[in-house]
Image (cartoon, rainbow, N blue to C red; front, side):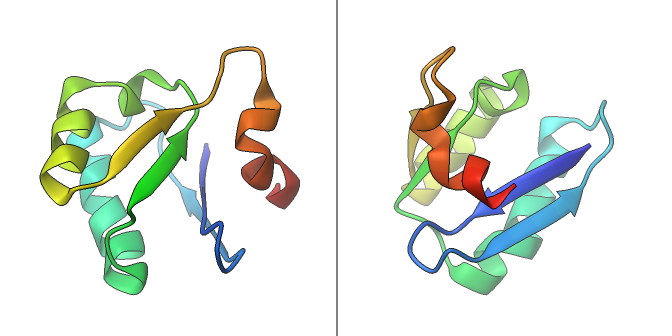
Length: 87
């Protein structure tokens, strides 16, 4: 599985290989090491509705970092159009 992270300002993209069953704490560690370390803490993130990113842990982590989470609309992939165009 590939986790795609796109910086909407610079249009830079990160393609991170992750295991399908990977737990949220491990994803959080990868996020901090690969994204926050390079780009800083984002002010907002647009997410698809993957259960790992709608979990209480992920929401709490982003709240602690001061990042607003915005979920893409179900059945409307154009909400996350930048990521879709990148792929």
